[in-house]
Image (cartoon, rainbow, N blue to C red; front, side, top):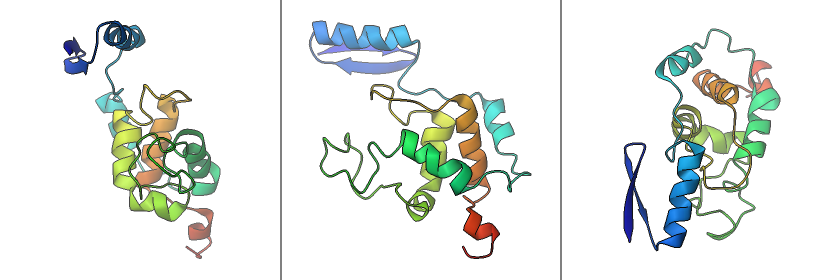
Length: 150
């Protein structure tokens, strides 16, 4: 077992060839296992003065479909299919998202460590992460909420 320092964090890697490849992959990406937003961007994102701009239907649903449901879906069964996402943390519905909104804001919005960097697939842009923070800070509105039905 080898220990590497990467971005101020320790990375434990098993083996030599595989460990070297993993460390080089992370180093080439120029990042640690997370990609936090700059503090000022988080502060600016928290401005929820325009809460009627984003809704589940025009933002949230597509965000979760694109970036989260490959692991956090009720249709995924077993550790391998869920990429080790904990059972019961699912974002298939607005209710599921609302249950974990604080955690989602931190991990996918501020820290950027969700989806994990080592998981193949698309990642949200900084702009999408800022929109996620705004939408969550506005209490995850939906069009049904605006119509008085939510």
